[in-house]
Image 1 (cartoon, rainbow, N blue to C red):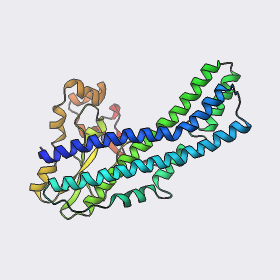
Image 2 (tube, helix red, strand yellow):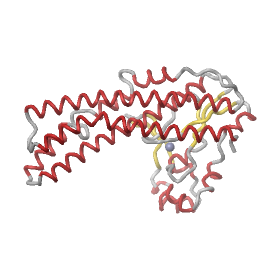
Image 3 (spheres, rainbow, N blue to C red):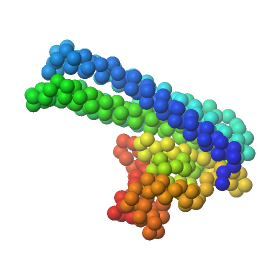
Image 4 (cartoon, helix red, strand yellow):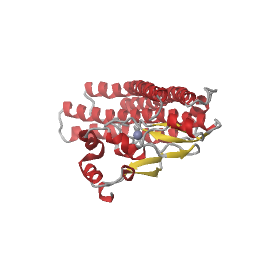
Length: 309
Ligand SMILES: [Zn+2]
């Protein structure tokens, strides 16, 4: 069982992370709102095809939406990094290593957002001409909707659903990259500190944590290894210390002990009905997760399908 001080910090960090996620989502939505308004106005004016002024305006706002989204995501990442730095220093302090200096968050964000980085690749894909909710997709819906004789209300509904799906996907990038900045800053602080040999995967011990993350709970990685999170993953890391006494203060409980504290309904919610039956029949929690390399997101934890358990 980790020390009281460590548990307090993890709880404080979880609350801080959730607040930053909400802020990241709000910013991502705000970045997209002028673009959304273009379509609302066009539909209100009864436009049935995308050409001339409307095409130009949509393309301009789409490009502006990309820049605003990027700025929103970078702000979220800076906030994630600042919080990640604080939590890493507090965890080291709670383990008796002394608080020490951080000052690495800014460098971490600069690296993660640089030209050619994963973030710019994600945004290139998100804001491609054919991206979800982009002018090309919306134009097609608008034209085919009217050509098929749908009512203006129905076309409006379809168009806004498409645009909003795009906004949600930007929100997902913002939340995921905010957490990445948080964890990469944790890791960077740990890497620079004597006595830290690695990091451990920690989850919120709840029914909202997915089977993949429960499966990886407590796994130990060297500080050179990036956290192989999945999109929207909220898991965090604690340091692994070479002094066993200090390490006991930060090490989480065994995943099976922790999972046993959930109610059977919660366990079923985490594993899904099929997975729950497998687990009951003896499949270990760690068999539910594996790490693959996603071409866009990088090392990513994924669920092992029930058929392969
Ligand atoms: Zn997770």
